[in-house]
Length: 244
Length: 213
Image 1 (tube, rainbow over the protein chains, first blue to last red):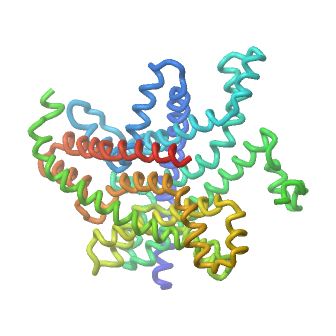
Image 2 (cartoon, rainbow over the protein chains, first blue to last red; image 1 turned 135 degrees about the vertical axis):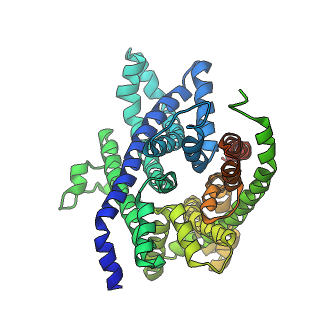
Image 3 (tube, one colour; image 1 turned 90 degrees about the vertical axis):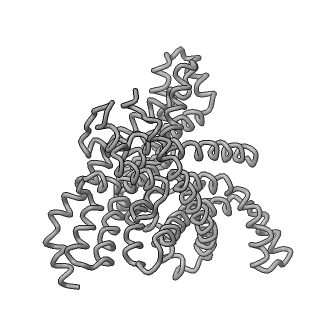
């Protein structure tokens, strides 16, 4: 066992590099996914058919086909004729993750915006707000807290999906697990360490997302502020909320 | 155009893709049966309130839920070399999705009105019968759309089985691509076949959702 730990300590810099690649994929994929989600989600509830139909087709396409197929299509098919587009493996991973989870997130965006009460739209129109102003100041601040918990789930899914990157020649955390296994010849040890690191990443991201969710809720007057949650002395709890 | 898409290659790869699709569907069905049963058990155990049980089970569920399926598959396949890869793959898929399903069941059970529990107590029904005849029939109705959605998402995650050498649809496409240096038709067709199966199923699930809601 101590030999294994020694090998693990020796390999720590490699672990760091692996985690870094996994995080690059996660952050890159998440940013692209968020962008795709808002573009497709807003287009999905546009009034003209010219925006709505393409958005639906794209969303259903990326939700309906497998992430594995998408990432390998980018990696193996794109460099071939007639495309001749040779992507960096990291770009391949980020684009596949971003488009796949962006399509899922587009549905979240669309659903959350639809869930904002119609009275809010009407009130904003009555106050003579333009469409952009209305969306930015009234609708999105209310839809955002509804989106957050679902985005958290998708982000964890994205972290897990990033393990595929090993097979498009990236040296991510999953690749490191294989290296550790070769070094120690202990399958159980290597995979337990690897899975724990994945768990730690996912858990840390969940904590960050929960904090963002609390902030989003507080911004529209629901729940305590982030500062109140993080304060050492327990925040004053409204008794009306505790009563069942 | 013939450089872009060659129908001869498409026709040549098609039979092996269909064969792979069979394996894909088989893995999904077996995986989903395991997930549906195990998920229900986990949900009931987590409701028991005995901390010595709920704590470890809760941790295990969180752990399995937030680590990659791919890594779990490769790990299990290296550990249980005495079993065929397909069996290991189905079991891992089933266990992974059982952790998702347990949350769906939990929500479904929570959605059963409190009055139903109280009525069962008032009628002096034993605990087993309360679950079997009162709570679960109502809870499972609520969980059917969730079950359908996870079946679709499991279907799309079966290509991960290719990494433990199960020849399902994606592996078949990959093998053809590698053997003939023509990935275009094989991988594109595999993607389209996924869409062909999963999109109608998702429409069906949506209809079921609307009808049950």
